[in-house]
Length: 430
Ligand code: DLL
Image 1 (cartoon, helix red, strand yellow):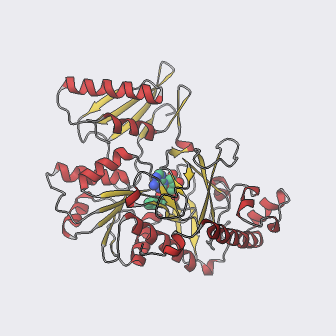
Image 2: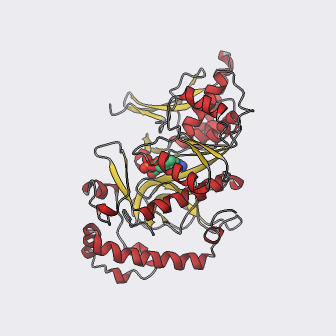
Image 3: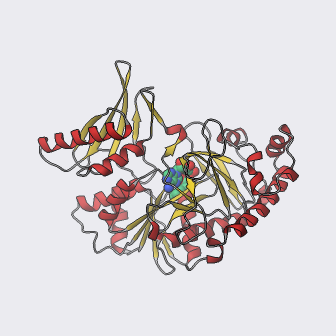
């Protein structure tokens, strides 16, 4: 490994000691500088000195998105504005954006975790990165940019959108690595195919995909379509941006390493908030151990996954499973909980279907009805009918819900234009 092997392979006891030290320092600091945290502690008569090591973390209350909104824009900053060097924001589905800030030291941590992530994804110093994450308030563009520069790559700051230009740059500038959302990687791959351009001669070898949930269905399509090895990068603005966790290119499908020297994860029960054992699925909660400007204690991400140690692999850091969805994006269909990624997995296991799909949810005679629109290039009606019947029965058998299947011609389902793609159209409440 080229980058900081001492940290990524640190024995667990040493990692715990480092985390405990960082947590106790952080708690002292936050109690003094952020009135919200002082009030949180005082309300339950918790004192900074009660937090002696990382095992005491669960004594601390959660911080939620609503707390961030209530202190909009800068109320949770732990450093004065003259020490802030960058501000990002993420737009939620409702209301005001969430505003986050970074000191110079925070930006260095950001660069470091993204550099680690790129390296794990297969990138090496001297390679070129086609960066198709959006630049701007979104953390994706500038976050990947800084980390790639730190690693010693040449960044091509393409940003999102303008697909035609992306294709030209991929062909002519010869980047070895691309990063974008998985749905946009699908768009790029489809566009090459539509124009009859072979991707075999492209220089690109690695795709670093994240910012939205995705499964092996999309991985297979992108890997075949662009001739790359595709890995998952996860992160959120509140914690730092991209680079909270990353899948290793040699360990695809086994989860993403969380850089837990900086971001301490817990998975908790979505109803009770009780910490869950490793391997159980629940809500991911993070404590930022080393950030200065915008540190968070036990931040409730709303993302659903599990965390576990996997000692058969390269690093000692904990892994997280692919995100199934966000707790607030979970559909409830006739009483059954459903994430769109579950349907994506079944599509993947059915064969003959592309991973371009969306779910339309409606009320029909007061009953929830889900229609799966999915593309296939099978031509005859009979073939399409067979595919639809196969998918329908697999969905019923694995998810337990009856859904309508609508096989569509290639290119007829809306594509990502660079940003995050919504795969569900819920018409029930409009
Ligand atoms: O999406 C940061 C990012 C940029 C991550 C580029 C990866 C690549 P936000 O806009 O604040 O930040 O959105 C964060 O996106 O809580 C998840 O729900 C979702 N998300 C991010 N990465 C993944 C992923 C960026 N790999 C929210 N898989 C998070 C599933 C993801 N969901």
